[in-house]
Amino acid sequence: MAISSLLTFLNLIFCQSLSSPFTILYAIESFLIANYAIAMIGALKNKDLGQAKRGYKIDLACLVILSICIGLDSVVVLTRYTFKAVLMYSLGLVPLLGLYYFFVIFNPVAKIIGHLERREALAKQSTSPYNA
Image 1 (cartoon, rainbow, N blue to C red):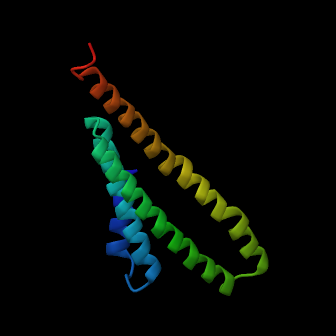
Image 2: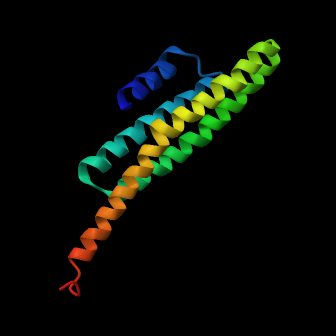
């Protein structure tokens, strides 16, 4: 995920014109997804709850930017294409993108944070001086 997002970011920066708001938003989104992936790899590798929560905040920023991109894309689709294309976009692509985002990006970070919070709670409980 990190490698593909970084390559997408580099492609958007160096090969596309940055005059379009779509290109700028997609470049920011791909950069944030790469940072999210790196933060989550570090959180898993170091078992660091703080880094996982940082990844969660980056994930929420990605969700906001993705929502803005979908909104802008919806306006373009509504103004340029036929009713059938608008229907396919709104009933097909948008829900699929939402499901992908939830199951591939958002759900794993919530699980990782949950596991790391339980791990820290167990570590605090086992090192407590009153736990004799």
